[in-house]
Image (cartoon, rainbow, N blue to C red):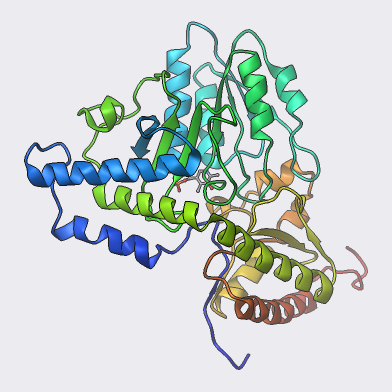
Length: 393
Ligand SMILES: *Cc1c(COP(=O)(O)O)cnc(C)c1O
């Protein structure tokens, strides 16, 4: 360990704000600080900035500008859809179909709604994290008001067949929502082609700022508001807009669209290189999830006989950032619900680390991580009471 670098391999938890994005945002703090609802010139200036950002986000997913509603992040967008659809369709039914591997922003909201009379069917996944769209179709009842399946899983990177699910939803005249937070900028999204009615997005996973996101609501659909108050966001989401944040989100969306191919190629090439080196140089490891149809930067690896948490902390002391399971569960001791759903044992789940590469990852970063990982894993296995040559495993 001669050289000391900082390596960030947790792009699915959050991303750094890109320089170009930050530069777009800066004037909207101290100079162009008008309230977009004000009728004088600085107000109109801010309003125009919002309109531009709305267009930039819309273009990334092939939506119309008027179908984009800015929120305080991906979690708010998920909450809004769920509360909104439940309220709007309470006379039709109370049944929602989702999956066992959704993000906590979905799962915990669904669990809350279950306490208030909503029925949820959670579709299971196979050992590689894939859902079978047939299971969704079979779960439909005449009380079903919403199908919600995340586009890309945040822990194991699985891409779900949203277009197929969108067709099933349409065939049965049921609304279809997808949490697209991990998909945005990482897989091509076309809301029209994919038959999506609602799509949740977040800026901070695509090199934009934290605390800003959006909900795409297909033209003609109306659900009750989540945040009540003024007439901002075309009357659908109250509160003075986070103008600098939204401007940053817009710029990040534009960059994601323009750099899409390069981003996907860069992050997947380095992810594959990391996977190849780990598999070749560290014994007793397994990759979770399928390598086909996977988030370009995601690698989820179980290191047998040791704790992912210990790996994380030892890597942190060498200035390497990775996560265990998902960032959201990293402060709880519960094993990841996603890996559990794959049938991975609790013991193996505790030995699991998620690496995600992104635009600023270099080959040297990966080499540095692998060299440190080899030392850390060997040391932890040395002191671990369990292992293949320790009598019991
Ligand atoms: C990060 C994330 C969210 C939450 O988005 P925030 O903007 O952090 O609230 C929701 N869903 C998925 C799949 C995510 O990865």
